[in-house]
Image (tube, rainbow, N blue to C red; front, side, top):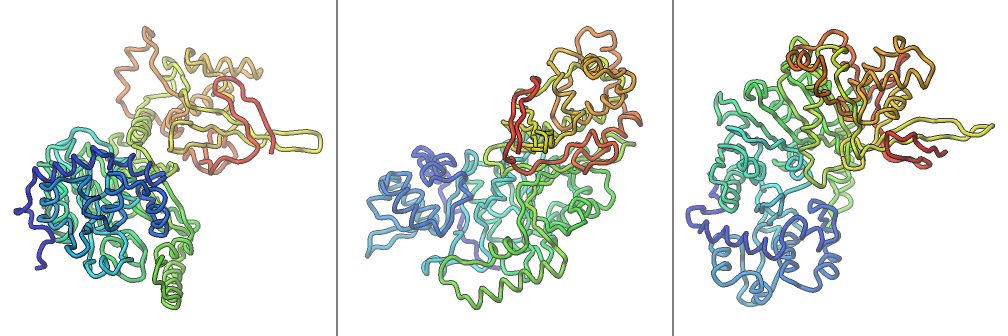
Length: 572
């Protein structure tokens, strides 16, 4: 068995935590690193930009500059520079813990590992880049993964609520185990790599996560038959033709480990539990990755939500995985790129999607479990509240006992919702091309295409009227009979509520209020089930006025005003 990298028994835990405190005091945090390097996110550090970082961003050599250069850019600092951050005792702890190595001849120091800020914590990992001979000679065969974009995405979308137990699979450096320990009585990290388990225990010590436990083993095996309230996973997911990096490669399809995790979830999640997985999924034209994910669940009665935060075609994706910035042998690069692209094309894959999947048991039987996808920008801040809102709205909509329940509901519009109408030129002037809404304060589906009926209803919501009053207003304005449009409008309100376009609040003092409260947890009627089972993001059908397909970026030639005012228009 390989010797652990860190001798945890020999490390002074109080001294280690004091070092973390000193670094945070000088601004070695997510925000501090972003500001000093001019980055939108810490995960966007690029080796090719190192010269710019060092010569321009960190040229003042302030204390935080020295810390970034040492722990994130894998650089060399002088003894004098190191002394501006750490006193003699702190330097002694770092060296005795095997975190720092000095050179007597040059009076310089290098970090043997990297240190990443995430949330309000710090985490040691192996170095990300092996461009330097000193680093390359010390890089282990199976390194512990640095904190990449996927680690930050999962941390920012995790639903954190007090729970009894959390399980973190493929725990790596232990980042998600330690973060989960803040809201769990017990957090368990499992990894098949002894080195990862060693790093996880070190990071638990660094962050004083006394209730974080790390076990070595293959996925669920070390925890027996225990069930958990929260299951997290950041598995190897890259569709690689060879198993080159254990923390990265998930087999030719990328799903070797992911498939096993999803298939076993029903056996390890409590009845009220949540599972969240960050991953890449390859998709074929004409075959949804969500359908494939459902098949892996094996018919389990679980709801599935997907937040899609990125997409690349197979050539760009392969290039990013194969390319090395320095010391590139072109012939070797050419051969590897061909191997990667051939692997993906042989499986008919067209694109690779970056997603965060959320699973919950379906509590609304006999209604079938639902599947929903939201598309958003890569999360740069915590969006767990947005994810929770989506799940709660979906649950509330499905539990409406009937369309008649909307009689007692007051309709409102979120403050950050903007209505957009786009026009195009014709031979005689302009005509409406389509309508959109966007959320100024949300990264989840920030723009959505909507149909005219949804637009007409949104324009008439004044945050005071009930749903029937809004429908009656629309009927009057358009010269239609209320009876002709009532049911269709109510169905639209249900889906609009699911998608966050409207809020529905029970009117206090209503004659039906007590009745609604008593039946609010009953299964939905067939009418409501039919209304909300329509995929809001599906393509238009003959009666497609409830369609809310996902928008893809902001087009040119559009105008926007806040709802409920009628929008101005523009043309493209």
